[in-house]
Length: 179
Image (cartoon, rainbow, N blue to C red):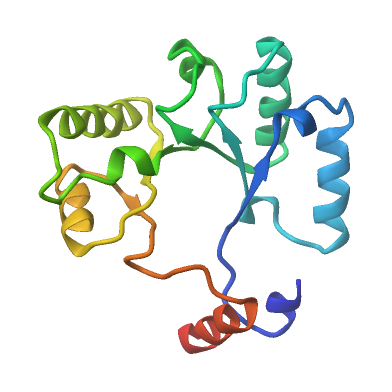
């Protein structure tokens, strides 16, 4: 809200949503009340669900995710490929983005790259596209990794190659330069 009032460009913000939080029966109402109290467009909030969190009641989880999606929020599956969830969940969950875990990206575009890593990443990207999902690769630290991931068709890449985490004041300065 402060950035909007200051005339700064707004970009989606990602927030992790834990399994424990997902169990709250009033979660969607609670989150919406917070976001609405600041007058923020729901599409600027991307809730990230970690694949590594085991969900006891998949039907309930899908209902919560569907309700968040219906309220206009974006939904991402974080750490994709490292958890125990069934691929069939991808066909049932209304997610927007698949985030490839850093552990798959570490060797790509380096001398440590293996054909197995290439195959896994290429297939995750292809599967995301076939499911009409955006694909984001986490943890790119080198230009060679970015170039290789782009050559595979990955749409969005994040990691230290672009920036290490920065204080909010530095981020605001970047936003001011973007205007």
